[in-house]
Amino acid sequence: MTPMGACPRCGTPHGASSMTCAHCGAPIAPTAPTISTPTISSPTAPPPMGIAPAGKRWSTGQLIAGSLAVVALIGGGVTIGLSLTGDDGEKVSGPSITTLLPVTTGGATTSSYPAGTLDPAALGAGEVLLEPVNAPMAEPFMPTVGRGTEAAPTISLPSVPIPTTSAPLAQGQVALAQVAGREPGLYGGTRNAVACDVQSMISFLEQHPDKAAAWAGVQGIAVSEVRTFLKGLTPVILTRDTRVTNHGFRNGQAFAHPSVLQAGHAVLVDRWGVPRAKCSCGNPLSPPEPMSTAPVYVGPRWPTFDPTIIIVIIATEPVDDGFVIVDVDSGGMIVRPIGADPETTDLGTGDVRVTLRWTDAADLDLSVTDPNGETVSYGSGTVSSGGTLDVDANAPCLAGTSSPAENIIWPDTAPGGRYVVTVNYYNPCDTGDVHPYELTVFIGGIPAQIYLGTDDGGLTPSDGSGSVSSATPTVIYTFDRGGGIATDPGNGDPGNGDVMEEASSTILGQLLLDCGYAGTFTNLGPVEGGWYWSVTTANGEAEFLVYDPTGDWSVQPNNETAAAIAVECGFYSP
Image (cartoon, rainbow, N blue to C red; front, side, top):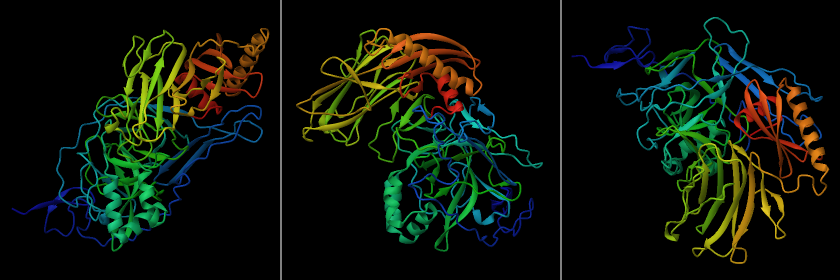
């Protein structure tokens, strides 16, 4: 029997002795095309296609004006639409926004592929290589550095906002949806399981200088920066079929080729969430390049492949506190810290998340008392309001790590009111006496203002930075979720509360009116440093906190509906 192989262009089986494919006429062993490697920007700045944040809309406010970008990568080029803000504060133009509804992806590919199944050398002009999970590349940069078996996620995925454009396209062309790399729920992962062995990548490249030079060239960095660059990348799993520029290694240099990676691939992403390396073969990745003709997708097709729902991931703003990804085992949301340190711990999240981080093996303890007076701590892991100790770090000392975190969450809706947070110096574990830390609080995924308790019983705004020691073993903070009541909303003047209420209503009303939102305002009362409002809009109930309304005011959304409106209107950037 004649042994059978598969055409590298269309995937059709053929006789091993054939010189051309009977289905598409492709040569079985064509000459490798000459493909130039694109220039990639330095990792100190966003990758190509990044959209820089816009400036302030109102000169009197401490508001961040957001910008929305739509870039449709199609066969005939790139179509761009922007939602920007002019110097006079007027909105120039903007695309409509749609939401990808929750979907269930297909199961893992069960086919087994022979070595070198994916051979970019077979690509012709206008062709894009389909790369199923677990299909080996021809001429990869290195042996696999992935951990475990790649498989398409089978859980229901969270919705991801996808900007759209109404620009006309030539017949047969399909606009590829652009998704910001920092978008919550875009990526997946298994909690506390490493999908990519970054240290193996580093060791391999350091032992192969020719490949290290080619790899660094794709990323736009010096060879000496490869180790630091890789350690700054974060391992995640693609949850959607994703278009990229992949790079193999041939004749001593990198060669670029357009590809679609099937959902389930493990990749490393930079701080903007843009894929930079494919874990299964170590190949460097970069954003896709526009094509002059409608793309033709060739290679092994997986059952769920659909050319109309491929995405392209772009850079908008960097991620600071961690990527919010979907747990591909449970379907819940988790927070993955930035970087490839295997000692870092994925964190649970929910309506309220309180996180304490420090940088040594000392045992610090975090506790949170809810508005009902119940305390979540290492001694009481859950309370009746739903509060849960998600992560308890560095206990005992022998189990300590140098990048610990403690995390307390309310997975579902937390009670409204004031929360008291305590950071406690429990055991130095032979790491010295003074231990700096960072405390962060998120409500509905949005950073919340926290306050530091003072010796005279007052409160002062804090950025969460602090330290504990034997001299100062305990530090206490507070924050308000929803209807927290300020002890002195009028700043010492009982009549000033009415002024703050009116000013906050005027500010919020004008912001919403500027971008076409009207609704019924419900006064939820004063909070520490400001006023709390709920607005009934066509999108649902939107909750906002207006801080310092009689001074250098700022507005903070306090639920997901408000956050979506604030981002769309350009007065908030998460």
